[in-house]
View 1 (cartoon, rainbow, N blue to C red):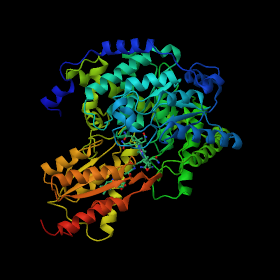
View 2: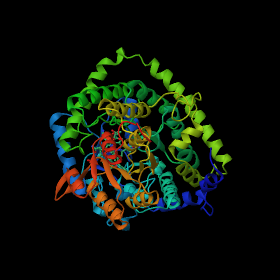
View 3: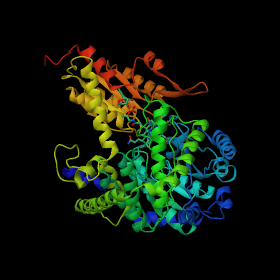
View 4: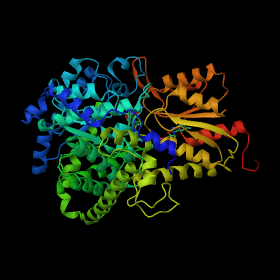
Length: 592
Ligand code: B12
């Protein structure tokens, strides 16, 4: 399935030795002191890991929140308000993910020039220091540290600030604006893992939040478990890091979610407590009422708490804010989610005897057996392509270059069946796979319901996502192809300039661009000016979450501004289909 060139590119020549990079990281970390935080002082531990171990043995449930404001002062004030509100309402909250802007993944000197997105920026050393000394919650760094071009400075800053869960190896696959050096990115990742290995005795843990990376794209939970085993192998076995994958936002089915948690715990041989079990975010849709979302969130967190009480792992629990699909959650939205989480715990504690866990245990065993096979096949496959499987750098580069879909097509372990997109029947189908098939079908049915679906044969489109979000793009591309359009799919984290270059090279009729990270207007300006520079008449469709901070107002819907720029903002795939067919003038599929 792989051509000679693909194989040759998996391990580029002249790579540094992974072991030397690990040593470099260890040496760097020897000069760093692990900071202390108010939370860790309060619980009399040097690291959150040790407190989590205590919670695991005492069956104490801890709570996790995400906060994605723009800078430290704003974040600190919001957290202080959340803390006091939780005290007043007698709600438990322990830890906060300081959800970073993607620019934090760039080297510090490149950050100011890059486009502002969504999430926190740490601009000064005082900002970092504040995490340990100015809030009572334990801060964690989930995003754009290990795995990013800035793996080394961000890991160092986090260690010194007393952040003792540092992520996120799953982001080894991420792309960063104006950064094209994947070898450099992976080399920095290996150095940072060397730093974390050095600090293992201090209780520092490498988190890998799997729904951020390839596992968000896999169709089979067995592939996801195999991927976790692969990361355990690289981080724990080859480098010596305390590594614990965590999961949750793409899991909707309570049985699958519980089973996956059990399978993950079964392969966690050092029993490093996972950072968290994230609430289900992907089931919440912009068009749903908050009341409906409340039922989804309450059920999700109820079963997570029940599983954690019955089979404790030490993972903190997260209840998704109801506003998740429509806006960046406000402090009020977060407190509301803690109300749901804390109450769900009371009810779960009262209901434990009612739950029969055997189906989840059986499914967990199937996922584990499948995952172990995926891992073995993956390593054998990499070896057969000439990858040195004892070298962490080679392993990370090769798997990054292979990509999630190819890894699953090559090493997925279900019964072969060409009717399935990845060529086999999944051992335990992911909710992602089920949902994407349904969304594609829904869009086609909606088109059919409004008349004969248009015939898009002869229409050519270049499609891409500007950030990591890929599901909207997947549905869009699938529907356009179903209707006969010829689509060049450039994938995720693609720079505007590259999209327009591809449109020029293929003389595309239209560009479809998906953007979610809160800079829709800025990105559209770049797309428009690249089109104008080349004098291209290409139609520009844009969708995703069309927001940006404007004149001090946060997350404003910029659809009207996009229209004024000459783009066509779309909330649904069907709107682009209508726009294309109006232009091609071919309705009903009668000609061509
Ligand atoms: C899944 C998800 C993720 C996953 C993505 C996994 C993956 N491989 O795709 C992960 C966890 C990695 C993630 C990360 C982030 N996310 Co996110 N994510 C979501 C989530 C839960 C679902 C979005 C989704 O894919 N829906 C499924 C698709 C099929 O539906 P859809 O998006 O509505 O798309 C439909 C239409 O919009 C349309 N469409 C979409 N694009 C286009 C394009 C065209 C041309 C057309 C015609 C139509 C079209 O067609 C689709 C099918 O009908 C939403 C919250 C939510 N529940 O909606 C947040 C959300 C989109 N994420 C958000 C953010 C901020 C981020 C981060 C920046 C957070 C951070 N600071 O780290 C990072 C991005 C990091 C990066 N490197 O880019 C915000 C965006 C806020 C905003 N702009 O107002 C949201 C709304 C969450 C929130 N409330 O804060 N995310």
